[in-house]
Length: 354
Image (cartoon, rainbow, N blue to C red; front, side, top):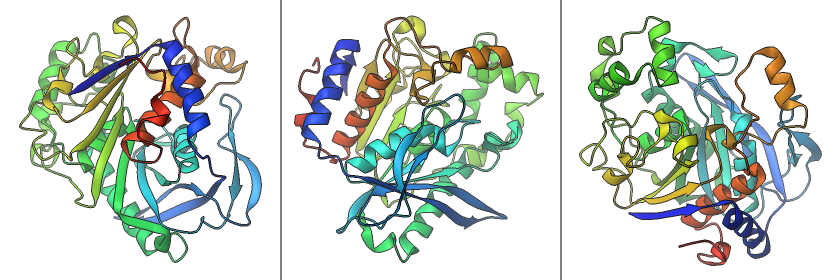
């Protein structure tokens, strides 16, 4: 296992190095739909753009800063790796548009879907716990992408990856071969509920983890087409050990956010948390600080924190003192891009502490 802690100054250096070494490509985007089960998956595709398209500001709202892309542009010539992207519980595909666009600038076709039942505007606490449906969502999205007459011919079928944040981080690990353990997570929530937000929410909703379907929770949902995964502050790994990770793909990146006092308990995979990282010896483990769990959400507008406080929402625009959200985002993009071979192997790492 390779462990690196990237503090603020080195994250800034990494961002600058990435900008100078990576040949950024114009980003195209288009909406995405895929039939799946009794519903339809919706989401967005970001990709290196060729000709055409309509310049637009996308993924922007009153809280978050958006980004520029060309809607409906033709994909760039050649074939490109694919990254399947999974958002966090109660999140949205556009909350990771910064990551999708960053990877697309480096040559990847990135497809993110809104997971039915665990997406903002379509959320049910009990249904969201069926974590395996999220891995199935990504597999269904990949099926549709490969069959698409425009995008499909541009896909390199030997370079398919998955990435995700929070609950989506576990989704990426799951489709890469990690098995869950319902009994272990139930035991974790039984002892940690007063301190862990997710466990408190389950208890408040009257959800009994011990009554869930262990056969599905603990099964393998690996998609053999996926050859590498990256998980940013992943959840659901409490109690998981080497046996659960035995079939995990060889290329694994675990990105943790924050120093000990700022880490989210449920997503802390270090020895101070679940210790999950030690179960994945092949993983590259990168800790970014100062940061917290919310630092992986989009850049906030100046008035974002005030608007959230007025509405009584989570303080998702509030980072720890000294944090630079843009620099952390750049470090995440560069780390994943490097692991997936989207940038020169060492060029984007100049100035990073070993």
